[in-house]
Image 1: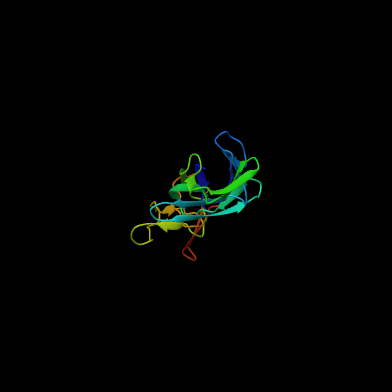
Image 2: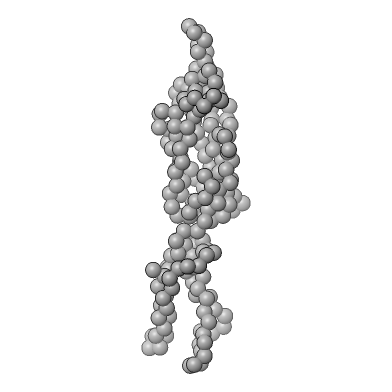
Length: 173
């Protein structure tokens, strides 16, 4: 829960445990009817939707696909669980208050995905004309499929310049 890649689905599992590390219980309160786990990621510009599925065994699978790169606070909460307190032959119900799981909220860094040639752009100033025999410098700004700016290099870039069509083709595969 520290790093994610934009455009890819990520999953994590939440396991309900009590203060003694026992699964499926909170203290002497046994989970009955399933606890509810919710999660969401927020930063100043975006929100990450997290879908949580109850596995009906005290664990919950959370799935999310971040689209925008950046730093998020990912909150994972245990909410309003129906509880049963067992006192021998007597039982009474309790509600568990909304609370963060251990370590929540998590600082999540979402990094850009792989370079997408269709989203990448040529960057140059002025007119795209040059005199024969002189260098022409054009920058390529790489972006991922969600238009997140790639901040690291290393992609293979192949450029073809054709004088007949005046087209510069770039292949980042």
